Structure formats: structure tokens, C-alpha cells
Image 1 (cartoon, rainbow, N blue to C red):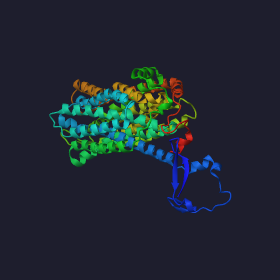
Image 2: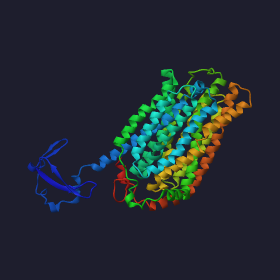
Image 3: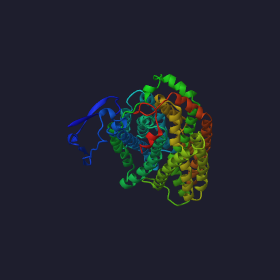
Length: 521
């Protein structure tokens, strides 16, 4: 047996690679035995062997690493789907929960508000931990925690509504670990256009998971005849996904930190983020998106149900189980528009980058302003045509969802790698604090307030909720303005971050290249 000397992949050292059958001129490969014909030109001394000849004998470890990174991004995206599936399963059976526990609109809205409040409080804590400790262990523990709590909450009896509210708060803590840390792992596994693509897939999981939450809640309740069974699906899938993350997601270096300056303190990180104007304005814009999606996602199915009661297309539900057709339809629309929105946003951004370097925030601004128009039309159309209302919802959601992946990618551009988990956590905190932490409860409170000052009737139940939801398009317009403000400072802040980030590839020493990224796919 003959041994050839070659460079060790990724170690900088050398190793002995023994090739069976080389002593008699043959080489054993995966596809069979090769017996090359030897000529005078082929007879080279070791000194004459070129570096390219040596490189050709190396195993294709970089290819395997790329595949592992893509697989890891896929698993993390599946986990994100489950997080949002669990979050919106409650909204899918909201009418049944109201009937079972005997709560009004404000009480039902409290479920989502408590969830988001605990989520936003826990997010900065997990951001701090994510910049300093093993991220995939934190992710898995978070999934295991919320899965156990959600499963347990399905056994709460009707006299303990406060316990259901508490359980949703605990679930928010578990899910905060995932939403804060998972994007930073993807940000460290990929660079440039490939990172944009992978983050698009990851954030497509938000509308997909939300839509599947409505579908799962309504379908499982319909099959089982009990809304509690809807809360027992996501925990089982969550346990499986948490295990896969522990096994298959690599421990990526944080932006190849050996090429960056020493890690700064948490207070210094916060000070730098607050001074980053692109980050501040994009975070405020994200808050308006959270406000609208939180309110619309919680209340639109119930609003359309009440519209049909007014139009006498369905009978009022005074005792469960109630119709879940609108939750099912809204879930399907959310899945489709989520896919279209992410693809449209990524495609529009890629095309606009050829025209202007400020493409990212400008595409987000246009999407927000266009979405506000269609959201307004929903409340006009719902008074006479449910089909027309669904068409407006489809267009409005597509435009609204187009900015999710772009916003995350902008953060990766303007924030250095060792600060990203903290940046994601702070952005998550502010977007929920100013957004969906209060919007579901606020809409329910306004609706109840209007009903208390009017005659109790199906008509005013419909109108009061519609008047409350009309707040959403005005908030969305404000978000478009914030994205336009982001465009003013985007190039300056991106340049500052790039000066401190020579390379974001966690596996490559040296400069990054677009050709390396293209070979991933």
C-alpha cells in the first residue's frame, strides 16, 4: 500500500492519506476500480507535483460543510414554523375559548398580550446569553420548555382562565429564546446574497407557521370535537425539532470573531446600537409591522365571522363548538401570502440593488405603504362582500410580509457579528413593546368600549371591532415613514460595520467571495 502526503483540510497541517490498490497502479473509488494508463508525461517526481494536483486529491470537505450549513438552516426554519404555529393555534380556536371560559373581547386579547409581554422581557436576556454561550443548547431548551407548557395548558378547566393566561406568558419566555438567537446562527453560517436567501426562508416560516396555526387549530378541533386537542399538536413536533437542533446544527463561530476586536461589554453594545440610526429606525418600523400583524392576526377571523352573521350568511354561535371556517381560510391565505411576500420582497430587493444601494429600506417602505391601502379596503369590502374582503387581505398581507426577511438582512449589514444577538433581542423587545404586546388587547378594549355605549346586537359587535381595527392601517403608514428614514442612514451605518467585519464566513480564514456562496446551492 502506498501513501500520498496531502494538506489537512481546514487544519493547516498535513496528514497521510493511504490509497488502497495504489501499489499496482490502480485506485479504488466509490464507483469502482480505476487502472490508469501510465505514460512518460505522467511520471512526475514529488518535487514536480503542482499545488493543484495535491488539491485534487483532497476530500470534498467544503462541499459537505456547505450541505451541513444548508441543512442546519432548514432545521432552524422548521423550528421557527413551529414557534408561530403554536402562537396562532390559540387564535384559530379563539371563539371556542371565549365561549368555554366566558370572556369578552378584551379578555381574549389578553392571552396574546401576556404572551408578547413575557416574550419581549425575556428576549434581551436571551440576546445576552446568545452572544456568550452555546446557542443551540439555549434554542433546544427553549423549545422543550414551551412544548411542555403548551401541552399542560390543554388540561386547564373552565374556572381557571387566569391559569391559561399564565401559561401563555410562560410559553412566551420559551419562544423568546428561539426568535432571538436562531437568526444570528444563520447570519454566521452564510454571507451576502446567500445569507439573504437563507434568512428569507427562515422568515417565510413566520407567515407559514401563523397560517398553519389557524389551520391546525380549526382542523384538529373539528376532527376531535374539542378545541383542547389543538394545543397538543405543536408540543410533540417541538420536542422532535429540539432534538434535531441539538444533533445537526453546527456550533458556528460568531462572525469569525478571531478577526474582530475583543468582545465589548453589554452596556457598550447597547450604546453602539442606540447610536446606529439605521438600526433604530428599522426597529421602529418593525414595531409597526408587529402592531398590525398582532392585531390583524388575532381578530380578523372573528371580524369576518361577525360580518357573515350581520349578512345572515351564518347563524350566531352561543355555545361551542363554533364554526372555524374563517380561521381555516385565513390560515391558508396567510401561508400563501407569506410565501409570495418573502419571494416578492427578496426578488424586488435583488433587482433594486442593481439600481440603488439603498434598495433594502426602500423596498420595505413601498411594501408598507401599499399594504396600508389594502388593509383599509378590507373594512369597506367586509360590509357587503366577504370574498372581496379576502382579496384585499390577500394583497395587503403579501405586501406586509415582503419586508420581514429584508429587515433581518439589514440588521446583519449594519451590526457587527459579535453584537447581532443583542441587536436582534433589543429589536425584538422594542418591536413587541411598541407593537403586538398591546395591540391585541387594545383592539379588544376599544371594541368593548364601543359596545358598552351602543345597543348590544350582532351589528354593533361587527362594527365596533371594525372601528377598532381601523387603527392598523394608520400604524402601517407610520412604519413606511420609518423605513424611508432608515434609507437616509443605511449606507453610512453599513460602511461602519464592514470596517470591523473582514469576513463573516465561520469556516474560512481570509476573505469571502461570492463564488463560494454560489456553490452552496
